[in-house]
Each structure stands twice: as structure tokens, then as C-alpha cells.
Length: 236
Image (tube, rainbow, N blue to C red; front, top):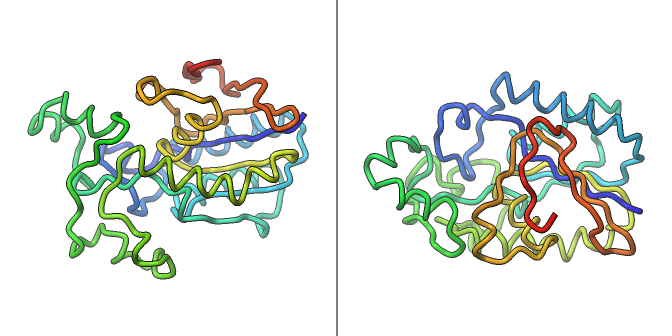
């Protein structure tokens, strides 16, 4: 039996402020740091030997993983960082308040942008300081790979392509990935074979490790370690 642990970063400052974040780098909120430390304690209780560590390029995921590894007393010099594990790019919605946008555009439209399979918000202007081409973190990412906006389908394609090329051949080992709500949602769709309609129902809580058990490369079970903050898992 091998294990894949998926952890959405702890609550960020923009989560707290209900702002669309996407590829913008924001810090963890104080509660998010506590969530990350608790995630580390929950993982520690499993007494697993972890072999590989992955995270996105974004500091809220990096910091979450750092806090988890610190709790586990594991040196973080073997962490593999990948922009393909980044959050979904929210286009022109980036930085805007979700509640204010519901009033402006209507709750139905915002839900469509947030949860539909293949509908993307309008592109973010490339002159915006929030655009990834203007953020130092992404200077080494090929320009043609940097999006102006993304649907969940777009996110799914980049995340699962990376998973297939860089992670799937390691699934006989124990792996920890710290990422984001939509990149983890994309992985869950792939691993649990969730259809395009049902994926909109999947909630990914911050800082709550999702333990997925594999047997001979096949998913056998999945559960959240913090039962009090667990969300329903489609097909499980």
C-alpha cells in the first residue's frame, strides 16, 4: 500500500478577504499557519515514511509545505516546485472581492465562473501588476505557457499532464503535495474519475490533508484526516 497526501494551502490573506487570488502571491493568514501546523500533526500521526514532496510556485503553498515539514522534522531541501500545480488563473476577476462581484454580475454568473467545467472569466490585462508575466516568480516560465485566464478544464489539463509525466511513476512511494483548491480539485477529478458535472460539487477545505491510498497503482480509499472539517468525496 502506498499513499498520496494532498493538502490545500492554509487559509491565505485573500481567502480571508474573499478575493479571487489565482496566480497572485499572497501570504498565509495567521489561521492559515495554524491550519498548516495542524495538518503536519495529523500527517505525523500516520507514521508514514514520505518519499517525495511537491508544491506549486506560490508562496502560500510553499509556506504550508514548509510548516508541515517543520512539524514532521523533515528538511525541505528535496521539495520539487512546479508552476503546473498553481491555482487556477481567474483572469479579470483576479484581486476582486467575491461578494462584490456577486452583486455586480449576479450570483449565478460568479458560480459559473468558479465552478463550471469549461467557462473562463475574461482575460486579465497584461499590464496588470497581478498578471503572471509581471510577477518575478514566473520569469522562467515560458511566455506561451502563462495564461491570461483559465477554466477548470484548462487547469485540469496542465495539472494532470504534469502528474502523468512527473508523479504517476512514483505512486508506489509515499508522496505529499501542497497545492490549491482548483489544482487539487483537478487531481481529484482525474484520480477518482469524477465527471464534468459532479466536479462542481467537490469542495476542497484549506489545510486539511486528503489521504489517498493506492494498491498496485489503483486508488483504494480516500479520507480527510481532520474529520471535523472534512468534505464529502464524490465516489468515496
